[in-house]
Image (cartoon, rainbow over all chains, first blue to last red; front, side, top):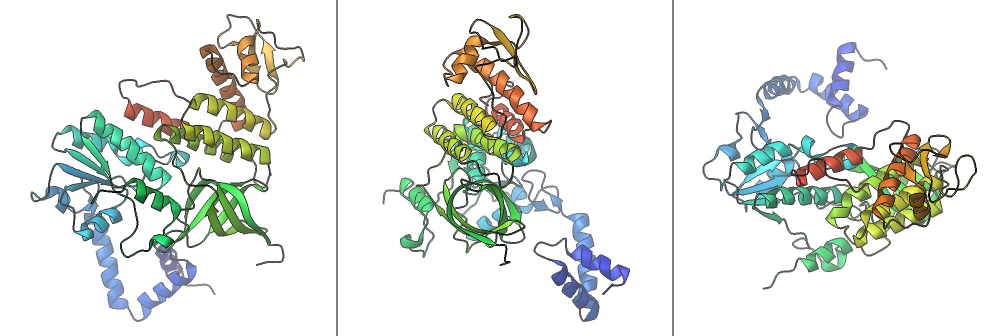
Length: 198
Length: 250
């Protein structure tokens, strides 16, 4: 069945969302126009306002409405610690863990030689500028434990060490509440090699 | 499963490249010993509940279970075929380079067990962390012969043998032709003979092998860029800014 042009356009636009195929997009569009008109109004306005106002933090590249995000602007944060992560979602995850008081730098990806993603695309120049200011004492490398994430961590560790800064890699191991029997060999090997004395 | 689907169980293979597919899936480019290079859809392999996320990593010998239909195949299972061992950091960029060569120069569904074994051996050498440059040159030679562009290092295009005292040049679509000793980029006959025997000990042999293989690969690549080379150079510059154009090992 052919939809009216504006409706077809709305369905097509909703497909920009992750995991939304043609079927779900059509369901969403029908809902918005049928029962959810006030919600749709609000969605349209907030989306427009967010696009206008939300940019990237000048320092850490996290989403922000001011030039600096709340974490970079906060005097409560430990300026000597800088944690490097791959995505904004990683910042949220670490913040929710509640155990970290330093600042962040978001790479928006990882080194991916086969896709042509190198240091330039990851904002390494901006990161170097922060390190050269002299406040950071330790670079915490919290990239993903994948081959690409490890390569990225290694590259950044060299940047830090060349400046005489400490670089540390987050630990990898058995999840809390997990059972060793079900942990994969690679993780278990890392857990053993990274064991700590008690 | 369509009538044309064929199930392959626990086939030795390597993951060459992967990209996200929908919310929790990946599209995999794999090199399978008996089936060649394949594209496989892998559903549900990302996210918190995936058991396969830690298995589906590049540079690790795997045992892959999948179905092959008329379109791209579907991965249904994967296991590690060897004890997982990380590559030394200095070898990782070179290993990505091997993968890019395989992705750009091999055809899909073109089984090449010798090439598969050569790749495994090259990864083994990179894992040992010894002479990376020699490991790359050796694999490049094996790859070229695996994809039907093998270099004849014993004879010129004319059929005459390569003389140790002579000087040569690689001409696309022809092969090695004799040139004057002072021609820029001339390859020494000594180097070609040494390379034929896998002996890359001498500095001149290494330099000549680099020139020869770069030219031969460029012919096969038909103008396509090797992005792993560009990224490796940028990483090298970032790691050693005092040597902005330092010698690359690839």
